[in-house]
Length: 378
Picture 1 (cartoon, rainbow, N blue to C red):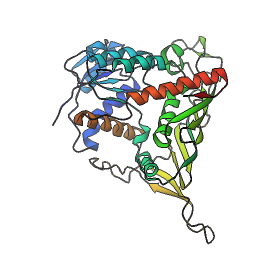
Picture 2 (cartoon, rainbow, N blue to C red):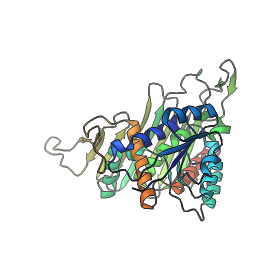
Picture 3 (spheres, rainbow, N blue to C red):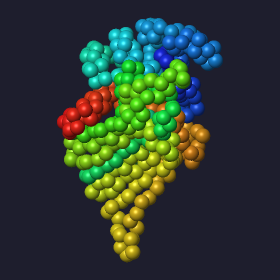
Picture 4 (cartoon, rainbow, N blue to C red):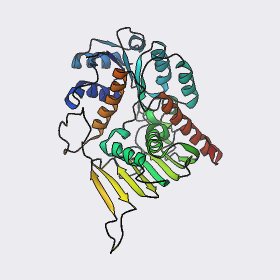
């Protein structure tokens, strides 16, 4: 079996997700694409990296990302740091021809994305952005149905990523809403996911109109809860989108949707049928066949729930079982499997850095539209 040593940069929440996926992948896929042990871990707080090394048996810990990206022993680099750190880490990993699996968004601006793409001119590594939504069985099936022509020509669509983490005015200002660290607000954090899944299913965007909202002018500092600091990044963004195929739809991303948890949803309406998905009910895909007879008395026309549950294709092992409820982290594992298979086969991965850069362009065009109060053509 092929082998590729792994290094993780950033061992916060997403770093742990990546470690979980690597450690447990053999339970869920047989055979795994390649042997991919985690060798090194980096975190800006060295004690965090050292604890991870000790807890999970990694070979080394460091606070210098170059000890991952420039290490000849490392083949695969995971970037799980705040957005503002990505560019420098990516450029180093690319310069040393590492395979790279990067958290979204790719970087902290479209300008930075251009620098990354320029550096990839002679790059030989496999690259993927960690967008996991396309890797639920329900969304895999949705893509198949769209490609088969089930919905026909897409007429309209709507997508939303709903979260309530900032609905409380006393919620602290975490780094994802700090402009100097994240580059943007909820557009980058959640909107990137919604934009990606819409493009994946509906096709390329042609023009957009966007507006955004900051819910509260200031929030408690994350470092010092007794100190309030100004909020510079948006809590809510709404975008109208016209695709190159002529469909018109909306995309919303918010962290002030009171009453929600962590919910990404989409609906697609076409000339022959419709699809809908909600990550809070991830075991099913809603499908509507508009060509079915509606007579007599409704005939057999209506919404059908396909029980996709955990019905991944082989080499998924079926563990813990195709009928058991699926969860958020299972999609992350399928996303990582996709990347590792591409590394093993030396074939392009998807969604790759070029798609990540395009999403960056769309998001920054959204900010331009909000500033101008006008449609922006892409």
